[in-house]
Length: 299
Length: 299
Image 1: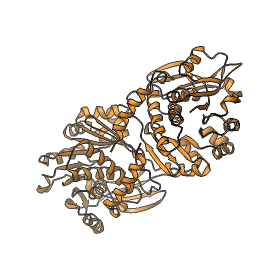
Image 2: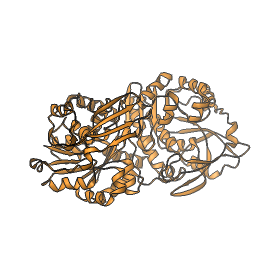
Image 3: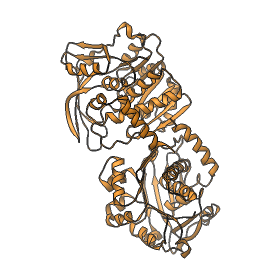
Image 4: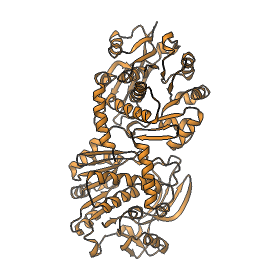
């Protein structure tokens, strides 16, 4: 089934201990789409400036990603520059230029409104609500958010939470949102705020999820050689949502496998800069890593 | 089969956001023994002072732990005071009084020398070697260590590594010992230093292990209510070694299940102060949590 994502499309300049890449394709919607398109047809909603390179448009098209919702506005594309140190922890932000993204107002092409699977990337909660208003009757709406919105737009974010089926969030954000330290207790608190399903990303340690009453804990695939961690969370969400949409099923078994596919796709993503690794891999390669991962986690 | 542990026996005063306990039974050998005795007969080698309370001796005896190797020396028992903040991260050490532990020189009762399973708790590597010299032909020797010895007694520690079958170590210590950040690459580097098996403890995130070529990754059991994290690593090691000794088998399948039992026993341990929870639980309760854990991790 079809999958809609709304989020940022950016030009990232990234420095890591393994190298650097200037003005690579970045942004949450880019990583999400490239990951999800391994599994399901993706429709992207976002905005770029007139300076957005045609080669990046081509990258999306090769993967069959529908760009009718990607608006080309007068002005420059969103740019972000960041640097990771030897620990590959949170990057130091060297530059953020919102440019055309500052005035982003997502208006969906009419044919997008009936898409059943929806991912609201990490944008202003008011814009997430604006997208939701335009959807007819989605089967699954998942959303991401970040510390900035939790701290500054809490009321709007709480309104989003009441209207979505799944929140995808990292562990620090769980604590910020709920004030609770235990990941299990925090995720349960979030369920009380609205979403039946809560997926907590724990970086190199994997993820923790509640699907209603069902508790699922998954480690991460161990990566020998991280090149660039940018987009790990978005490619995780993309792999997960893409897989779920491809099954068109919301049973805990499918949601669990979604988490696993998200984990594996993210493990490929960090092996290259930008979306370079994502655009090279095939579903077969992911499935082969799945077999390896099953062996590593069996007891 | 029988299991020998050498390590500290202490009186701990611990403050956590959930309460405090003064002069509770602590020390690596105490946690290890209480955990391991759920699975196999344990023989403890350590030292206490003349002030060591008889009630603690009784606690060990109730669990069938052999104390012929626990020397009562002239002087006071090792004392440690620590405080955990709201995050339950590394505790702040308020006081360390080595007392009789400062002159600890482990001489084993002759009948201990043929014990097949051996755990060298976190003590000076020279003392770990002294214990090894006295063992006849153990089937499995595992050892713990810490940043202090890695930094200050590296040569002696490297000698220990060449002579053991398994190192149990936390993630930060892997980086300190190898200079490598990736847990997989770091553990492989440690294998080159000697031990065929490397078990990396990752606290609330579970563990990562190499058993020869076999890679095993396990999440932690999600604890709703941590009371006191002290001894989590030692009860993990105790549960693991106790289970392995009870199977008397070194196949990767048994070592994996050892990790899982260690994980579960540690999850009980942090639910109470000192060894209070460990002395209450039964193998049946651990097995019941095992079934729950299997459900939480299946995909």
